[in-house]
Length: 451
Image (cartoon, rainbow, N blue to C red; front, side):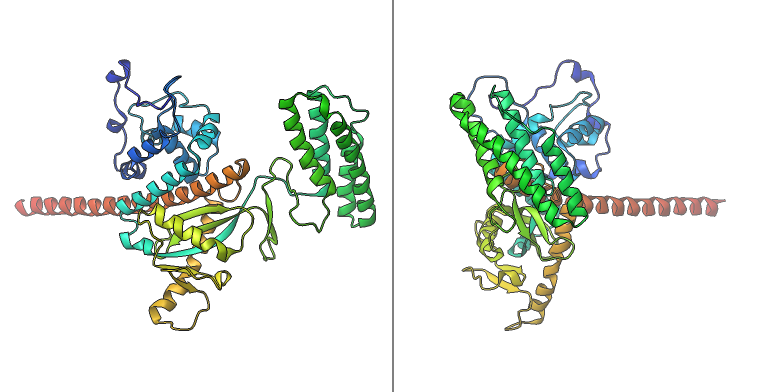
């Protein structure tokens, strides 16, 4: 059943309202007034097609929790628990009276993400862009000049080694056999973990011949378990057979892949993970998905963010990124100017002027300054990875990659707006103190003159 607006209970009518207790000049209170919640509620209500069942939670509450989670870098459990303790968070999420119980179970956020999909989180990003426009953080013309770059959004997986992947495959196969009543002649529950540990010791001691021999032995043991489960697959019911077949297919990939193979499987539970070469000494490789980012030239506000599965060439992602910028900013056309680095060389888009790093032909003083400004997107990416949640994606599957990337951009925008609101409040408070001090000095001088 679709969401319904919550009505105040009779007992709450005699309680003081939050807006009567809080500082209404607080940045979160001002930010709540800038966001178009009605558009978010309309978008979130679309997935509900049935009129039966219990009414869903208010979309304002869910959207507020997702915003706060990515603004303050909190997990599902942390954002729900902090919501109870922070009345400003409650006001931001649409509450009228102070609440003392958890608003939802943290697992509900997972189901809401799947329900709203990529369209829903793009609505949240578009609402943050519109809020920045209303708050004066960006001008209407700021979205016509954007900086575009790509980065890697690492997945929440352990570093992939052959020994760990093989032993993890064996563990899952043995567990699947036990859960479905399949009898295994040997499960290697003692031998395989010892081999995996010994492989790590050989690698640390640089005894690579012994290490490779131990890896071959471990692969043989895992292969026996794999073949034995495969032989008994026909006795399983249809529903369970599909699930076990998927596990067999993934463990089979791990058994057959070698060090120099392409399109390897790097995590048993996350087959969408890719190995992306960074070309940097400190991080030569990262395991995750490529993300394309577009920010305004002057302010650094994120106006486009999208995951790019398949590790495409950076220049091939430019058209999709600029198309998304036009949709999210409400212009329905790509920006007039895009500033990129040398990785986008050779790409041309009709109606868009592309300025690249190192470009020299036809450059004026203003265009040179715009190209120098291109590096401003690098600290933006750094802030999203350190202050936001871009540095480690905990969501599952390709859909989780898409949702997490867009919400990281929305969280960065809200941090920029809050910083601007805090600066305004500090300046306003300082100016008021100066005025009050001047008035007090003037009144004291008048008293002295009368004496």
